[in-house]
Length: 91
Image 1: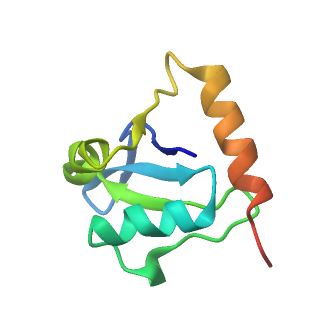
Image 2: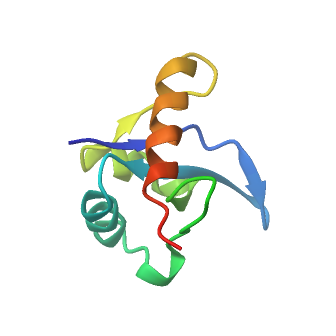
């Protein structure tokens, strides 16, 4: 089982943000909690279950075991991770 964090390229509210995704929701919630991200920040979306992570926490997520993935160089992997995150959406 794996947790992933993509590039922090999404600008919002004066910061850059990354997406934290995982093979399973329990893994995703566990790493988010270790980063101090509250459960209410969980994005249960049809586009993929994830947490938004500010760029300043990206290195900490990697230190906790998240695999860094790049939308620029790991396109096939990113696509697969997003597809898996979509299957975890629970309306």
